[in-house]
Length: 85
Image (tube, rainbow, N blue to C red):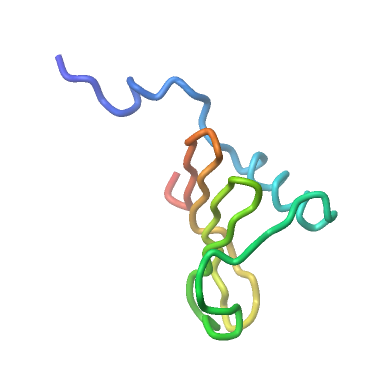
């Protein structure tokens, strides 16, 4: 019998609430978000923008200079979330 990735993953899944709390902390100024790419927000304009927040890695979508959604997120403990999950 082969084991699947889910069998090996013993941590709880990353939830939208987990990601929301990190982004809320940024908005409240208790965490700092830094750009994780060489391109600025204006240079990206209509594409994905990777950012880092205290060990969290998020990929945000810049839709013509407006934050549209979070495409993917990796927590410091290795949990991953995306629009597909």
